[in-house]
Amino acid sequence: MSAALSPLLLAGLLATPPTENPAAPRTAAELDAFWAEAARTVREGDFAGYAALYHPDAVFVSDAKGTVAPIAEQLEKWKPGFEETQAGEAVADVTFRFTQRLHGPTTAHETGLFRYVSHAPGATGEPAFVRFEALLVRGPDGWRWVMERQLEVASERDWQAAPPASPKR
Picture (tube, one colour):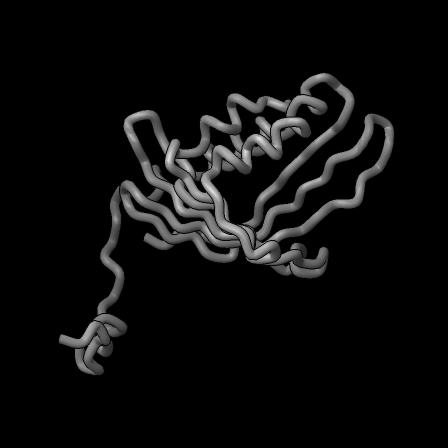
């Protein structure tokens, strides 16, 4: 049996309108709160809080570096930056913009860009703009990242062109 979809089945899938999800506004608000919490933990250097946003089995993918690893390994690489921020030796900030937001009651796929900057106190840092994808699941303790995929470096122009998107219902 072929794993390919037949043209008729594919046409049916493409023609089927999305079903209305009455919980979508609540889910969208929860996901917005998730990203706000991610930004807060970076800004405050709250490593434990940031790490808690990930599912224990989460995966980190870097297209630019051609790597894939358990998130625990990547978090250890990021930990010194969080510690410097928490100690007041660095200032860090991250903001997110979304180009596509797809979600259901317990799963989400978010696509967009983040703007990250880190610098010494009193200095001005050069922001990095990165295209990314995130897969998230809702568990008993809220939303958790299961996959973070950093796609490629983007430009400030790309950042400015990325309007916030309303989640699909």
